[in-house]
Image 1 (cartoon, rainbow, N blue to C red):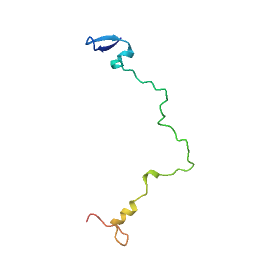
Image 2 (image 1 turned 45 degrees about the vertical axis):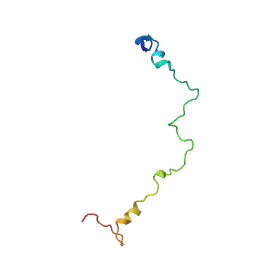
Image 3 (image 1 turned 90 degrees about the horizontal axis):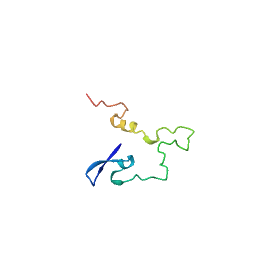
Length: 79
């Protein structure tokens, strides 16, 4: 048995399942189109892996130059 709140009598009344789960007479919208597939495999397969294209260029060697002496040895940040 399903119950729904009656706005007219201000009490719980017996109801069908479709009425009990549809507040105030609202009905779910039925879509005629199929939802798009989110987790689909790519349609174009590559023959070789491309690596980390999303990561961009490795900037570590450039940034390490800030902590090197002119002869290429590293400076110690702590003494």
